[in-house]
Image 1 (cartoon, rainbow, N blue to C red):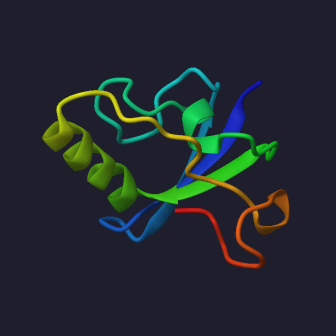
Image 2 (image 1 turned 120 degrees about the horizontal axis):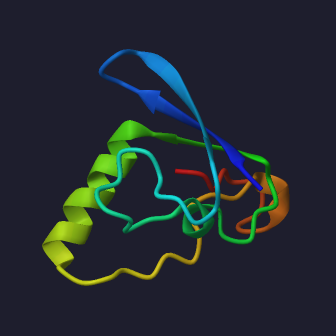
Amino acid sequence: MAKKVFVYNNDKNSIETYYLNEWEAMPYVEGNTLTVGEFMGSSNSPTLWTDKRVMECWNTLRSAWNKPLYVGYAFKRIWEGGHGFQSLHQ
């Protein structure tokens, strides 16, 4: 099932909207090193959001590490668990 992914593009000061399946790469990620499914983890949200700079930082970290990185989740809504009432999205 396709997820709606919002990405804030700081270069354009705009929100970009993508409709992606869980096995597809997150926008701005080089290669297929971070999929939508890995990003959303156990969240059951049909809508995800992030920032272009976060995805670019992922590329830098992944390149510097030079091997696969485990991602338990990068996105969770407050009521889906975590640390009390802190926001858990990146």
